[in-house]
Image 1 (cartoon, helix red, strand yellow):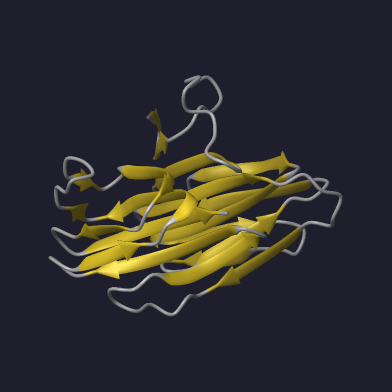
Image 2: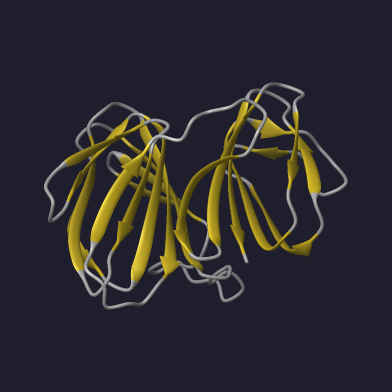
Length: 206
């Protein structure tokens, strides 16, 4: 957890000065950050290369600055930045209590940078595909009512993050709440049940 004026960040993997040799990456996922920002706070222009960066906005609104100019990403939208050989970009909250989850995938390549924003169709109780930023890497989102059950499909690697709400205790673990995650490796299909209205962010890697 990292606290700065106007910003709270939770790192799921080793990042910067936060090093944990047992949590460096999960397949191609090398960063999974949960950011909460007040209006006007964020990340000034900085450089990336060899990454695909996926941003899911849970609340509020983010303004992304890059080579194609400013673009707004709102709650319920996903943005995919392909850094390619190198890109300079920025991210700033333009609404109070802006919260977004950002994932970095290791994706070296010489291609030109690109940036896309999409709004997946939300369907209660189902996994909805939000993005497939790399072959074999699929990002899905599910919105569950209280006591609604969802099947998490089998995959070689699966990352299930509770973006909002809470899951009931199961044979898998104690109850999971906002900010907790399951990391499955070669597991069969698992069912999870929401204890309250919940939003799950699910990655599967082939």
